[in-house]
Image 1 (cartoon, one colour):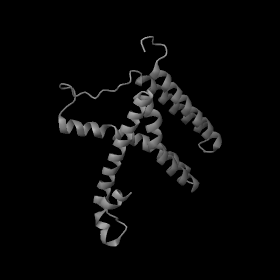
Image 2: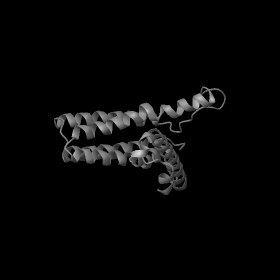
Image 3: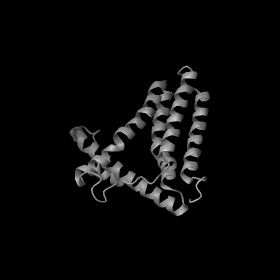
Image 4: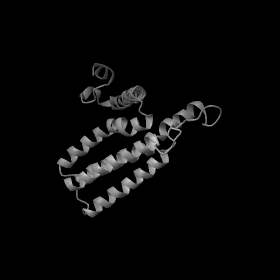
Length: 185
């Protein structure tokens, strides 16, 4: 916390209001550093306990990035703005896929040149990723159908099946990653 305080200008003070751009950039830099360490620690923990990277990604890292979203949605929903809470959760995931994934790759290409020349490939170490993506799309369709069935209202009877959908997705992802039907694994 001391490092944050030391490096990030406090724009709430009148004489520093014009520093908002610096505060924003420094905040993004801190988020980048903390995210890098979080991913690195998850990979190390996965290697230590024999858990594949994709499983660490859909469990530990997903929870680490989604819990703040869930809390903000909870606070907004308690103010009676359920539509904003739901839109926030969907919008953050769209932002992650549409901005959070491509920007690092675009920066890499800008700095190192196009991928595919020599050994510059970004390797995705999950041969069953396509199965997980199909399962996730199926879960999204089930979620929309569930909300539609409850006439676009949110209550605990909508939340309980969503938890069940989540645990089903995690189970499917784990089964696909460990491939019990493959004798070579």
